[in-house]
Structures are given as C-alpha cells and as structure tokens.
View 1 (tube, rainbow, N blue to C red):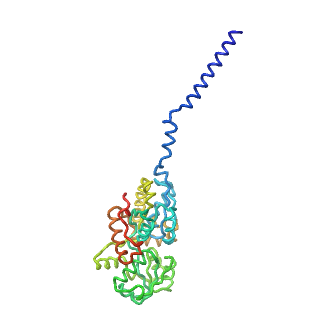
View 2 (cartoon, helix red, strand yellow):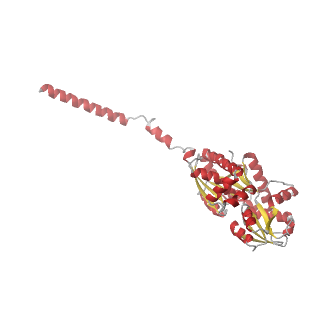
View 3 (tube, one colour):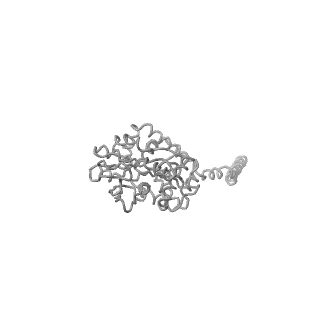
Length: 349
C-alpha cells in the first residue's frame, strides 16, 4: 500500500514538471519566429495582391484597353483590376483627385491640368492616342481650315484637348474662334454623331470611332479635313512641328511609388492589349461591343484602323507630350493648368 502511494506521488510530481515546462516554453517563445513572421506579412503586398482602380473613356482609349479588360475578367492578369468607363473627362477628374481612381486614360491637356492642380501628384506613363479628330461636312465647301470662316461648327470636347486643338488650328489660319466662326459644343460624342447623321448639322468636328458611325449612316457626309494633318501643317509653319497626341495614361504618383511593381505590370499588360487591338481589329471589335465601349462591333472594326491607338513610353512619350503641351501652353496657358509640368511629370518604367 505504501509502495502504491509513493508511486502515485511520483507520477503527480512528474506531471507538474511537464506542465511547468510547457508553460515556460510558451512564455519564452523566440520572438524571431511567430512575431517576426507576422511582421513580415504586414509589409507592402505583392503586385498580384494590389487591386488597381482604372478609369477610361468610351472611345479610342477604351478600345485600346479592351483586351486587358477581358483578361482581367477571365482572371488571367498579373494584377487585379476594377475598370470604370466614362462618357466624358469630367466624370473622371473629381474621382481621380479624391484618389478613387489610381490610373486613368485622359486627354493630354487634362493630364497636365491635374498635375498642376494636385501639386505634382500625377505622372503620365504613356501616350495612348494620337490624332483622331476630323471635320465632317454634309456638302462640299470645306477644303481647308480657312474655309471654316463664317461657318457654324458643331463640336465636342469643350474645356478639353479637342477645343484647344480646334482653336489653335483656326488661329494659325487667321481665324478668330470668338468672332469669325460659331462653335456649338455638345456634351457627348454620340449626341453630336446623331445630329450629324440626321442631317441637322452641316459641319462638325468629331473623333473616331464616331466619325465612322456617321459616315455609315449618312452617305452625304464625308471627311472634309483630317485635323492630324492640319496640326502637322500648322506646327511646322510655326517652327514647332510635332505629332498630334490626344490621349495618355496617368497614375497617382503616391500610389505608383507604393506599388511600382503592380504599376509596371499594368504597363506591360496594357501594351499587350494595345498590340492585340491594333493587330486584330475583327476580334477586338467583338470585345468593344461586349464591354459597352461601342454598341456595334462592325462600327468598331471599321473605326479601329483610323483611331491612331498607340503605346508610347519613355523618352518618346516625354518628347511627344512636351511638344503638344508647349503648343497648347503658348496658345492658352489655362488649357494645361497655367504652367508646363516639370520633369517629375514623366513616369520612369
């Protein structure tokens, strides 16, 4: 009986020792294990874990983005994306300033305006659209810019690149936009396209792909002037020849600094999307209709070759942007926010 009692006491003592050892191990756990791992997890997320909020306009900039939108929907992109389609630049501006959009496709002059307004917290990453503007006429009286004198011109893009391009071209050809012509601005390209196709307007300035839509609906309307060609003539005459650029991709600078890997991956994926669209107009046009960028794939297919969708980055992007912004600045400083952007405006990939 005494032996049994001693054995029981020994077992109880050993149990207590093991319990204390376990508690001691927990309380003195190496901080380099669990705690360090937790700290490592709190650092900046990997690129694929970042969701990029991207805004683009219906039109050429949206068309160039369409393959990326499709790939993102299918889950085959390196990044995660939220895409927003807008009908006009002012639908993007306020939300970009508030930080609701990280990346946006906007007119060239708006990019510079945002840079000035946001005190440099904007960078341009690529030029994505060259000239897409045309003067359409229901008739046969317009053969040069000077022929627009005394006419009524319907247009879109007031306060954006199209207005400043038109004004610059008129002025370079001796026409005062305030006195020598009447310019009636409409808020939406689609609204103006309908007006022109119905024959209710004789002369208008429209971008692709709306131009193609009008020409298919009204056989009496034709392309009277290619404003990209007219820009070339005017800038060469002024001794500042440049390639007309209308659209670009911008990024919130602070976001780019914190998520450079994700932003660089976006540029790679976006360039691939542009290459796909320009090489495969038929297939791309189906996506354009699917994502609501244009209502009819056939119109998109015909328009894509005339949309001047492109991808320019690095030094080529910088020189193209600077040349265009300088022309706009000289014509109307307010058109780009009152001052030319500094070198920090240009993103380095």
